[in-house]
Length: 252
Length: 343
Image 1 (cartoon, chains in turn purple, green):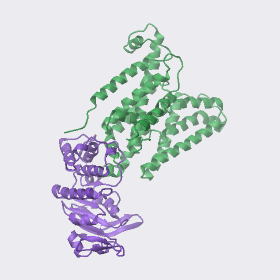
Image 2: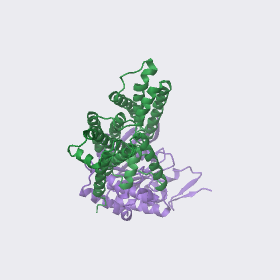
Image 3: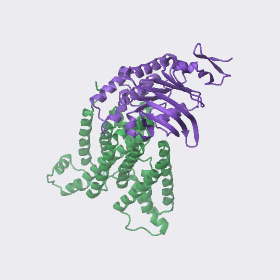
Image 4: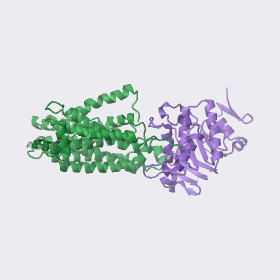
């Protein structure tokens, strides 16, 4: 589905991370974790072709990402970004509907299939009661669900999400991550998200990519724990990882 | 299943209002003509007073059509700019279109005396003025487009447009300072704006350009809707950012540039009408908004023109003053009463 090998990301003059390798099959939930500023968002933006890759390979179903035309890309990858939606007057339904743009005709008329997909996305994210509400009346958690519904309506095999759990309380974080897991497993979509919720990700994700700026270990949470990959994720003088409880402890 | 509202009724009401305002607009003017006679003239009947016939056919009807084109054109270009820049305060003139037109007009009217000391006798008429204004707005628009191709950030483009406006404004000030009183007066009259100076031939040209602008806008509807999510989302939906941005800017240039060239700078219509339309049509879908702002803008312009005629008197107020007097309070009202100017 998605194969990344020896990828270097960053900006013209500066490589942020290099030697990123991972491989995902359909229906897998993967989280990208790492310390602030290591390049999690940069990686996500590179995978979504918001910025160009520096070197290495990104293959989607065997085809190079760089070669894909923008229309084709729009039917392969959808995104949930951290940036605010500028139009705050838009209703939930209108926003989710925009996810169907890659499939609609020149003026954007919805077909039966489009309406079906929109209805499905709204149902999965439990937004039925909110569908006529304008965005400025929504809470952070509701808005996040709307954005995910929009990505889901775009009906792409791959969904990229940049920090979907920020601004949410513990309950809503868990709720959202469980929902992502369910979506990935039930609809067979590959979902990648960046997160700081390492302990939750360990429990819920199929695969994890640890950006540490050196080896960038990738694998199932179990394998990563066994190979002691989490121990070196943060400077050891502040937090230590306990592999029995699968949690981080503050070093006092 | 489909919660998309249909706005058929609202559109029907707007259309009826447009026809009513058109009729009303024809029956007001510095010469009072009975409403019945106005109707007779429109439907081709001979009038008792042949000068009334002349006034209606060669002055009032072209003026009313100009009002429709000006109002619709400015309102649509305002909508395009607000969506492209995702800024509720953007209007057709933020790209420096109006200041460019002013510069063109100012150089034609006042430039000759300042630079050569000669009076530009016979050079200044409606046609040359329209030409100079179009040329001015086109040049400023080109400059903004060249800058636009260098930078990616739309917000920076907005500020650059405003800066171009400042520069051209300053040049106009310098010209005004050195010119003689007569020329200055002529320039100020142009800047008042006027709907009544167009011949049928000019009207035809203006409507051609406006229709072209409308076609480009309609072709952009899908990308306009995507722009509401921001540029990164729009790109991820398959929108070609560069191409769509150019088409939208060209459409704005055609709409606002041609209107300003023929009718002078007319303020606030482009800024206020999209917001008023959003009060009536509670949607952000440009498939509804594009036709709605066209109708709404045309109606508002016809009404402003009626007010400018000062019904019952023989004097006429400058149209630019009327749109500002009516438009500015509307913007303030939107901000205070509705507590928001969202788009």
